[in-house]
Length: 363
Image 1 (tube, rainbow, N blue to C red):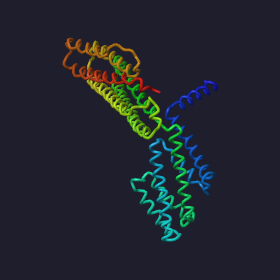
Image 2: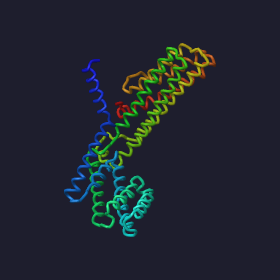
Image 3: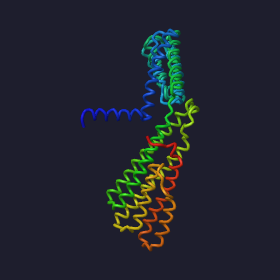
Image 4: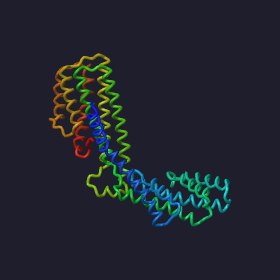
């Protein structure tokens, strides 16, 4: 590959990365945090004429969180924690005077107060505010203490406004794409199982199927975590009301459960086939052909819900009726019955996938 081709490939990879929804959301949050920081500093200095107004941009920077709800909740905690820290430092200096003892008492009480459930996430600000105020010599200067509180209010207010008004984060697409990728991987795995059973799979191949189901399960767990984050991102978010395409978290959670069931059925198939391989059972060629063809079509439909297929459920029923008259030995039917049952269960998953194909699409 020459230099031009490598450069083109790098540009294409970079462009694809930039199109990922999680990357776009992260970049937007970085830009918004920068905007909030600069705006808070300008407001504190040029509007309120605050001296040493570093708390305003610092607090604004820390207030722009990944969701509107978290911004409002953590910002409110920051204001309360700062106010408590200022009050604590003032009382410590007034009671004990300046010195290591008053500093130690203020920090100790601040750290204990930080464990309070109401401000636990921002509670460390109680101790750090008291630490700053006492070591800077502001403990008995009421006006400077009020300035520090005003700095914090400005920073939190600006951070909240920027995060709420400037493209508030709504991470629907991240959860959608994570689930869609898992759905696609499940469909591809089922097609792989069908192809390898048709060709004659060994035990190592079966174990590879099981390992792949574990990987998909991990992806679904990550998607579930992202879905919980999506639910939080919708709280108090004005974009949720303005968008007709906002993800229905409850419906998507139900769909996620169905995919988990599909992965479980894929693992069940792997275990049944593994047992047949270990016991060196001969496959009935008619069953092998009919079952693998049906499983492959089910997997293709799960991987691509837009794929047009014939009535797979009717094919499954015909296969059962046909094989029930073939005089298969009793040794075959426990295996074949389990495999047919798994495919029938996967048909239900396939139907659910097709029902939501317009909302859950891969990246």
